[in-house]
Length: 143
Image (cartoon, rainbow, N blue to C red):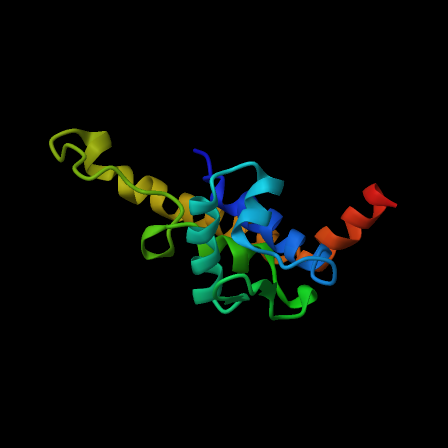
């Protein structure tokens, strides 16, 4: 299992928006050059972050900016904005286990609560880290 790169790209994007907000218009091309990906990917993630109410995007060369205080934006907020998870469930169960097999017949009963606990633990950790934490750590590396 691996979370897609959309999450880390989104955190990178928002960190750039905050870091360079006074110096540059933070456009999709600007972000793409920092992240080294196609600007189309950036624009798609910008739309997701905007729809989640985390950033604003001004058309044309207006740029993008974070609109909430960084200490109020958690990794969980970013994750939920950009990761396409069905019904807010991290794990996707295979569709048709064989009901004639004792394992297949009972696998949901065996795993559902355990997988829910794993997801809740991951969400607790994601909720405990904010973009303010990221900026504070970045300051240590660039100063």
